[in-house]
Length: 115
Length: 115
Image 1: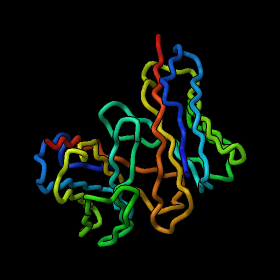
Image 2: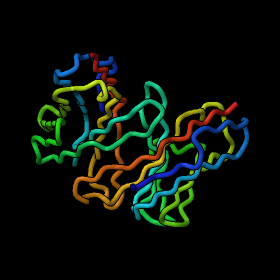
Image 3: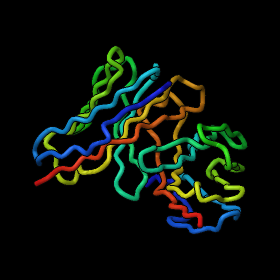
Image 4: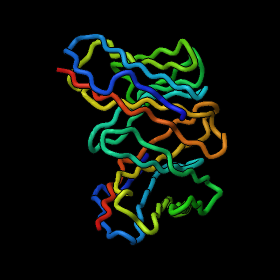
């Protein structure tokens, strides 16, 4: 069966360190993968998209890697801050479906950045 | 600021009631989606639409229907609400597949409780 797996245990790190979150998938050949941030009681907010032919993408303190051989994406936040505390979701589009790019989401990993 | 607006943040309905959840976007997006989010299960796609009057079933369409009469509005209908439909409902919109690095824009969610 198809699965998107993110670590369900919360990740606690100290301010200033690099947080690394993992997204593994099985039985998918994703066209692209996305990462979202979700705060409690709010909708997810889009952060980054990486395509199957890209190895790495950066945006400010964020970096995403995508290894289609390992079937894994890593999401890094450098110089983490308490304001980065949130749940981070990965999502992928299994295949291009014409106009409808429906995403399938992982269950998310909660990040807590402590002072 | 671009927005997806969901009509209610909190709703309490009785079992058997017909429930309408409204979603409006101001970004002229072709694609619109309805997800529900439950602890431990993540976001699950209920229905999506990639054009006016078009709709497609997602992964869990049973007990739901949708309507898209105008491009900016996508309504989710619970035909006869049941307690297992108590959940957070999230609406999202997006441009079609392949449009650069755009992700979904989500609304703030409607927390529905069926009693």
